[in-house]
Amino acid sequence: MHSAKGPELISYLTEEMEGTIQDSAYSPNGEILACALDSGHLVFHDAVRNKRYSSVETPNEKSFLVDFIDHNTLVHTVEKDMRVLNLEKGECTALFAAHTSQVYSISTSLMFRNTISVAHNEAYIWDAREKNPHAKIPVQGRPLIKYSPDGRVFMALFEERKEMCLFDVRSYMGGPYKTKRIEIEGYSDVHFSPDGFGFALVQKDGFRIADGLSGDITMHLPSENSTAGCFSQDSRSFIYATGPNEISMATIPETKGAPIFTHSSDCPITALHYNPCFEQVAVIHGQLTFLQNST
Image (spheres, rainbow, N blue to C red):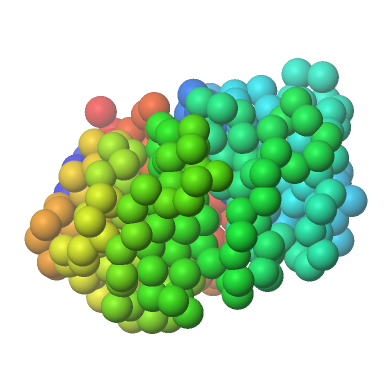
């Protein structure tokens, strides 16, 4: 995606959805974007053909989370529980129930078809083929736990302890293979770069880009609306909201971004997702707009 605003970029607002998008995720092949609405519906949009599929009603009556396990299977939360949905069959194939409070974060490994779910003082690893949790991760408070893009490693961030812990999925029961102290507070989310060598911490005043192995902070990108940000496919750029309606792009390690898009919606931008297979960004602002190169 070009790093300067101009005729090279085009955008198109998709058909209005029956609710406000609360969470969303691309399928691994980049063809489908799944959107979780505050109406309790799951909506699937073809990102290549700009086509809307029939929505799926869930038991949710408010916001919920969604992520793909493979291109035909996804998992979504239902307060304290999670449901596995087979898209080909159009049916729920598994129910994960172990948490005692609402799940606030999920992360999936495409390689092992596993899901990590996190609630207050609780974190579990689930296998889509098993009914009970595959393992329980000992945690306290509200940590952030995310799989690396290749699914071989997961990272746990403990704000209270100011620690970053890296676990090998094949030997996580033995504890982390690396622990790093991180002198950062007030982060609300974390995003891995596609190559796994970096990650972005989301804070109120912007984004901190860090080395994925050492945990060292390499740059800070200030933002008045730090709810939305994502890495480009090649991990060399970071696209992020600088205001309620403006998106900028910074080439790493430059510390200043250039505006590339402004949208006219009354709702602020809440999320950005870079398509894993195509040069396209999904802009979430209650509804869905796609931003991509014209050529």
